[in-house]
Length: 228
Ligand SMILES: Nc1nc2c(ncn2[C@@H]2O[C@H](COP(=O)(O)OP(=O)(O)OP(=O)(O)O)[C@@H](O)[C@H]2O)c(=O)[nH]1
Ligand SMILES: [Mg+2]
Picture 1 (spheres, rainbow, N blue to C red):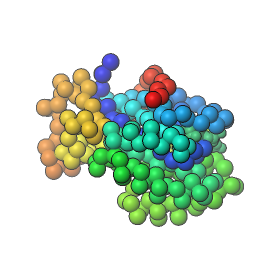
Picture 2: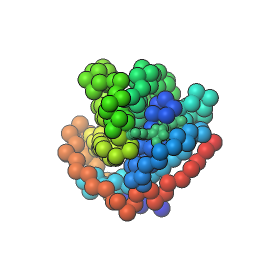
Picture 3: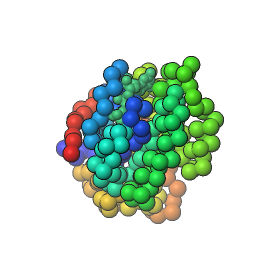
Picture 4: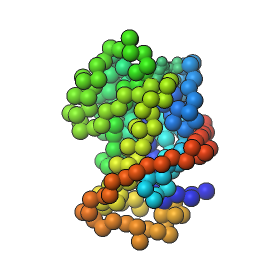
């Protein structure tokens, strides 16, 4: 059922083992798994959020970090409006590779894509190899937000997805993104069609500050595996 104002497609990328699937599982299902069950190709999960008076459905594509799946995962970049670049704060190489993942997205995604950098596994503070300051500085270079998370404890995980959804919605409301262009990874749902003419903020008007509530009951209502 498309009972939402907008559906946003997000994609999670980063080296293998950084915790991409665990971040998604924590966000959609409030669960953590200890094993590294490497993603084969692409999987997806979804969750509904309410931002101000808008129902937003996030459809999140979780990609394999392993090199051998690159050609499959690339085909998912294009239809995404949000890119989450994840590294593991206890693995310096995974941080160095964020630039490579950024290049991948830049090369294949649409030009409107919002991106954020996430340093995961902050519960393992004693094993940290990348400082917050260094990662923040790196993110600033691209004018991206930087979040530190623990998919294990859940710390900050919701904030990553909610802040991205907030930014995309603000861009729709300011007229910067045209949601009718499906190429951008956005779909208008049945609520969006009914209220489209009355609720849109005219172009060049700043979007109002957003408040976000989450329907916890919707968590993981549609967690699915999907592979190509
Ligand atoms: N301590 C800790 N371990 C984590 C965290 N996130 C993930 N892990 C562990 O890291 C390992 C890899 O997690 P996954 O989510 O499967 O990694 P991935 O990035 O999806 O890996 P690929 O699917 O191969 O690309 C697993 O053993 C997880 O339990 C975290 O925040 N803290
Ligand atoms: Mg995975």
